[in-house]
Structure formats: C-alpha cells, structure tokens
Amino acid sequence: MPQAATLAYTQPAYSAAVEKTLGRKPQLFINGEWVDSSHGALLDVEDPSTGKVISQIVDASEKDVDRAVAAARIAFDDGRWSSLPALQREKTMIRLAELIEANADELAELEAIDNGKPKSIAGAVDVPGAANQIRFMAGWAGKLAGETPTPYGLPQGATFAYTLREPVGVCAQIVPWNFPLLMACQKIAPALAAGCTLILKPAEQTSLTALRLADLVAEAGFPAGVINIITGLGETAGDRMVRHPDVDKVAFTGSTDVGKLIGRNATDTMKRITLELGGKSPVIVMPDVDITQASQGAASAIFFNSGQVCVAGSRLYAHRSIYDRLLEGLAEATPRWVPRPALDPAAQMGPLVSSEQYDRVMGYIEAGKRDGASVVIGGDSPSNDGYYVNPTVLADVNPQMSVVREEIFGPVVVAQRFDDLDEVAKAANDTCYGLGAGVWTRDISVMHKLVSKIKSGTVWGNCHTVVDPALPFGGYKQSGIGREQGRQGIEPYLETKTVFIQL
Ligand code: NAP
Ligand code: MG
Image: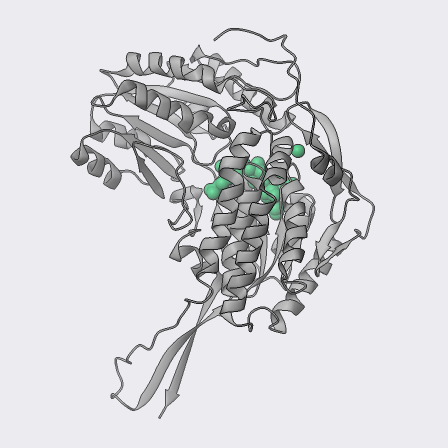
C-alpha cells in the first residue's frame, strides 16, 4: 500500500438543494410540526470528508422529549392511527416510501456529507433500502391476525376463546450513525404497520436524513403525533426516552455497552425491548474456493462502509493451504477501497464518521502492533484532512489480542489460519458476539455443517452483508435481543390479548 500521508483530498461542492437544507433553522418535529427547543442548545454537524462544521441541529432537552412523548401518547390513545382502516395505514406508508424515492438524490447526498459514505453507495444501498423497509412492512398492516385456539382442558362448546393482536403503544426508537436513514426506516416501519406511534432519535453525528424524513412524513399525510423526530444526545434525550413512564417499547440499535445500559433502564417500567448490538463476525474460507472471488468477497465484507457495519467480516479465517494466496488476493482487491471524499464519484469507501471513531480505529491498529500483530496492508491514513483510514489487514495475531476480541468498527481485518472444521467453528464462536458469519466454499456438505455449528443470527454462504427486508435480522449472545425485518420484525410491536368467553 503506497504511503501518502500528505495528500489533501477535496470534497466536491454540495448541490443547491443540500445547501438549502443545511441552512434551515434547527428544530424538532413534534406533533406534526417543526418546533423550537425549550432551550437554545445546539450541536454541530460535521462533514467527515473535510472535518468542517456544515450545519447545526437541536440538542433536545428533557422537556423536548417529554413534549414529543406526550404527542405520541395522545396520538396513540385516541386511536387516530391504530383505528384507521389497515388499507389507509398501508397506503400512507407506501406514500412515504414513494417520497423517499422521489427525493433519493438529495437524501443520498445528505447521507454522504453527514456520515462520510460515498454518495453512490448511499444512493444504491441506503436510500432504496430505506424505502424497501417501509414498503415491505406496509404490507403487514392488513395481514395481522389473532388465532382461535381450541381450549384443551374444557369441554368443547362450553367456551369460546380467541386472541387479538394489538399495537404495543408508544415506541422510543434510537438508531446509530452507520446507516442513518436505512436504520431509521427499519425502526419506524414495523411500528407504523402495527399501529404504534413513535419518537425517533437519530445519532447526534448523523441526524440530517432523519430530519428530511420528517418533511416527507408531513407530506405523506400521517396524522399529527404518530411520528415524532427529535435530535440530541444519547445520555440526555435518549436516556429520557428510555426511562419515560409513558413509553411502552424501546427499540435500539447501537453498541453492546449502551444496549446493556438501555436494557437495564427500560426494565424499571417493564418496557418491551429489542436490541440490535455489536458484532465481531467471522469469515471462513475453505480451500476449494475461487481465490480471486473469495478475496474480493472478504475485502468487501470488511471494507464496505469503511468497516462501520455491525456484521463486518472482521475476523478472517483462511484454510492453511490457501492462507498465503488469499492474503495476496486481498492485497490485489484492496486498492479499490482506498478512501476518497464522499462526493467524489470514484469513491468506493469514504472516511470514518468522526474524529472519535478515527482515534478509536487508529488506537486499535496501534494496540495490535504493540501486541505483536504485523500490518500486511494499510495501517495508516492517506490524508491529513477528514477522518480517512486506509483498508488494513493485520496478520500474526492470536485470540487474546484486543484486535481479535473487540469490535473495532473500522476497515481493519485480522487474518488467521485453520486446519479443520471443528477447529474453525470453535474459533469462530470464541466471542461474546453472534451477529453474522460468512462461509466461503463450493462444498454444500461443508457449508451446512458450518451453518449448524456457528452461533450467529445470520450465516452468509459465498457472500456477506446481504440484507433483505423479508429476512429476519438480529443477534445471538451479546449481539442483541429480538429480530427486525421479516414476519418476526413486527412481533415486538404487537401485544397478544387472550379473550375467554364462557358460553
Ligand atoms: P452507540 O454509541 O451505542 O449509540 C447508538 C445510539 O444510542 C445513538 O443514537 C446514541 O446517541 C444513543 N445513546 C447513547 N447513549 C445512550 C443512553 N444512555 N441512552 C439512550 N440512548 C443512548 O453506538 P454508535 O457508536 O452510534 O454505533 C456503533 C455501534 O452500533 C456498533 O457497536 C455497532 O456494532 C452497532 N450496530 C449494531 C447494529 C445491529 O443491527 N446489530 C447495526 C448497526 C450498528 P448519540 O450518539 O446521539 O449521543
Ligand atoms: Mg456529521
């Protein structure tokens, strides 16, 4: 990897539409209106491609949160959303998906300058993915149903029993900065389909697309108070959402440490909880693969979104007989991923999201080196501006090192060798996480053996990070509780009421 630490990258100019959005007065979207915060506190919005401040957002106070919860509570309790015909709920959701699609270019650019991901990727993955989350879940609005179980211990005909599925109520939804709009829509979609109302808080680093989403919510025709979008800090606004007595359910995506804290805080009032947390996902490469294809797959498993992906393939296990060739293939695949500014049309990978994330990732690389790991590729930054880290491959690692055990959340993969299936399955499972895993082989028998041995919410065969709204997503072990997407994704937004009538 060429060293180019003096390069100054240039982020191309923003579009007029985005400049206009950035110049708006910082406000919160509560009860169907843009409102001022109860106090004047603001947070800076930074473009990670340049490190420059480009706008400001509201740092919501506890009072602001209380106001948003009150709006959601009233909107739920008076049934203005849940008692609408399911057809109308579905149509309103589809309208929101259409508006996202109609504003795709601006949303992709906003995501790129806020998160640092290439605009081309945001336009191909995040924005259509967000619309599809809503489209898929909209279809459930009219397909929810209870059951009529036959009582077991009572004479037939003496009673009539059935179950009803009812929306759980007011939902507090908190999302991270790595796929801001996509995760926001992944959260709101099942809540809306179930008939819930909600308060959404994006991450402080990446709130721009959630704020634009609020405009589209208003345009789509949702009743006031059904969707409330507030910006602010996790420790203040987020914490208030989690503890608020009028909130019935918390849905969180983020780090495992914060997830544990939120789980504890939400339990005081026995809120329903779903948690999508961190990972340290293995990628296992068997000797029978096409090396070029598998190396490219392993590279995109870790370098996509600058490695800031909860299922990033951050532990590479290559069979001893192909280990050297796979690392050579990885070196050949890597130049494509050298980071560039998010609006550069040639960018495949952008900078990391923030200076904190940059320091964290570089700190892990330094810790790895101190522990004895060797840097095979990268390990440095190509530029003095922005938060760019070159795609990095570390070798000569052992299972005790922090780079092998802990989630780095950057473009850093650790490579290890293995000899047989039991050994690699044991190594793959030697983690507190269990979110994703990739298996590369053409041998269908080996594939299924590994699928059953690996403890994780998703196993990919000959691919990685493929996500679809119809397929459940979530973690085993400390990677989370519950599932999003698919039929399972709507369950956490529904209560079951049993009705038992003596005839
Ligand atoms: P984070 O620090 O846990 O923050 C996530 C969200 O929680 C942010 O909106 C944050 O607010 C908020 N928050 C922080 N402290 C809080 C508290 N005490 N109470 C309520 N809310 C609080 O995670 P991150 O650094 O943004 O995201 C990276 C992590 O997310 C990684 O660990 C990654 O693996 C995980 N992740 C998991 C999945 C999955 O589906 N399993 C998907 C993507 C990411 P502020 O930041 O605005 O203060
Ligand atoms: Mg930003």
